[in-house]
Length: 390
Ligand SMILES: [Zn+2]
Image 1 (tube, rainbow, N blue to C red):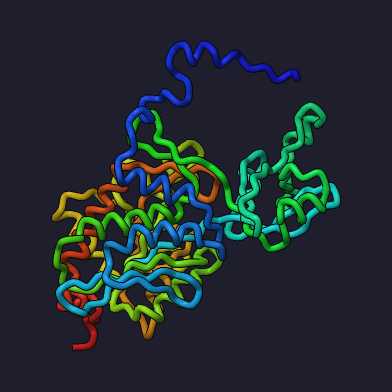
Image 2 (cartoon, helix red, strand yellow):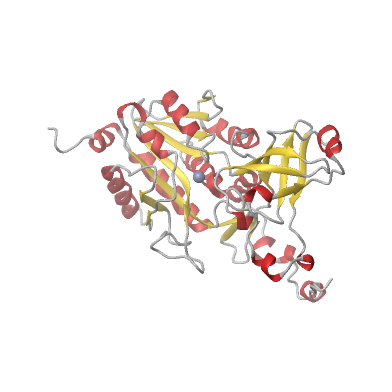
């Protein structure tokens, strides 16, 4: 073992042990508790049930009706003092994951990606396979450097060569004892943690549990309030493979206007360039001006920006082509509906750990609440009209 590390003992003496970081001493408040529950739940695309259970638990007391579409998207209805406009909020429950493809005679599992992964973030990570017998933990094995040439160490592994070690000694143990079978979903395993500054939160699956938390927190604030519309809080499924749950749930909701709630793309770390993405942590909610799936209604965009200005909420803009979101399906519903994508800027999406700012999150809730209080029928009709037809 040539790779040596200094003892951790001195750090623990100094009070720097991982459980003693300043940001982690305080107990979590209800919002952070909701975030912890949502992000630690396993919900790879097509297997969103564990997330659905948490969403339902929190939504039920906040809405008058709760139902699902045919794919499993959850639709909570909160009636204000009028039926229209019908405002659809959409945040997706699924996270990028894998499914079991084959199991070798030695008991190793090969898998197929579901959603967009980079090879660099795959090795030496913890995962959970959701089997018919319950969760099975595993690690994506990484070849030890001691047996590699310099050239091999620098080489990128191909996605198809990544394997999972679940501790099975042969195929029979993997399939019969552990219950693993082809098609079983695989989710990243990674705990929620508050970082040392107390403001930044680390977790997997912020995309799009941040959007779900935002939707639930906004409804909590409106709990005892009348609002001039009916809100449909929709937790969609299968976003990461082509916005499928947003397509099916929009047909059930029949929205007049759509607000997609997403994890944005913070690019404020080394190696990034604002020409690729523009959001940064700590500068407020993001408003997407263009992505590969949608250009928002300009009138709705202007309305959102004006609401933010009136409420002293800073906003930042994003123009990004490698990104699609559920808003596109709401926008294309039934002849077209004005839609916008509002985000909580997040670093390191589609990996085991993303980072967002609690301040940005709270300001995103402020913005969403301001929008839900002010989107009445007249306003939505104005947003939906075009100047060239009078
Ligand atoms: Zn997303």
